[in-house]
Image 1 (tube, helix red, strand yellow):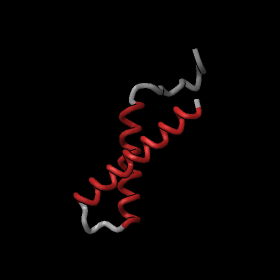
Image 2 (cartoon, rainbow, N blue to C red):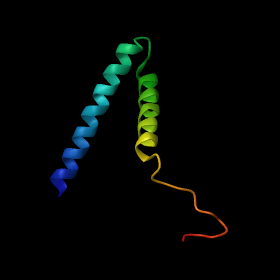
Image 3 (cartoon, rainbow, N blue to C red):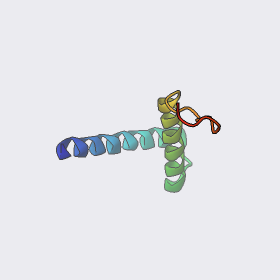
Amino acid sequence: MSEKLADGARLFDEVCDRMRAGIRARRPEADDEMVEEILREQLRRLRRLDEHGIYRPVDADHGLE
């Protein structure tokens, strides 16, 4: 189990490195701080797309039904 978690973390790090390389290719003027900011925003967008429709607001008057 811990090996799978380590593999997942390693794969995520590799994907982030590739995303950083893409950001630098598109925005050569961006310093390291800007690259990280853009990366975080891209990850937030991807998460919102991935989670779209999964979570629904709960009606405060009726609670969970």
